[in-house]
Image 1: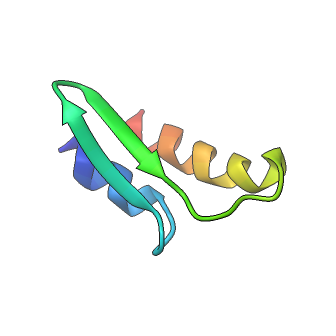
Image 2 (image 1 turned 30 degrees about the vertical axis):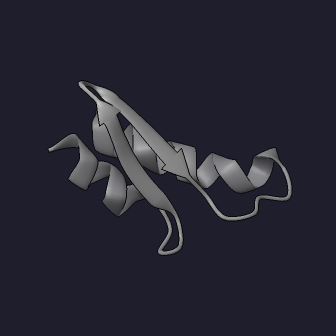
Length: 49
């Protein structure tokens, strides 16, 4: 299940929501720059591949 895999790829305070069909929303806590988002994005890509 995609939602479950995404949930395991984000931080404890972040939220995954399904909009419908194959659309998902990820809400993160404060990120100070792009470098903060990179590890999260890499992990999401890894769990979806």
